[in-house]
Length: 80
Image 1 (cartoon, rainbow, N blue to C red):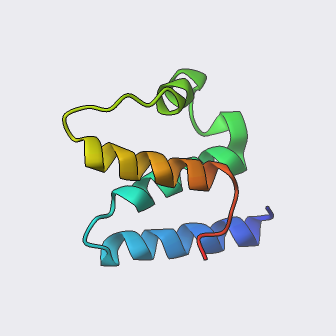
Image 2 (cartoon, rainbow, N blue to C red):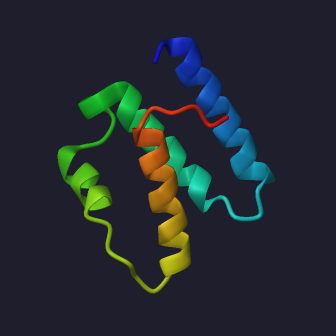
């Protein structure tokens, strides 16, 4: 992924986050995309492991959406 693609995906995801009634997926996507593009610079390894070791909590549906978005962004796939 080059810088233009990264910026395009980040911009689209940010816009969708604010247009969506449930922004959790896009929050996760943005976090995962940043991790993918910047690799180890963006998130400390401990935080990355915490996301990968996802544990459902009281806000389970929110976390599932964030988790799905994080994995999507982390894969480097385009938002569209």
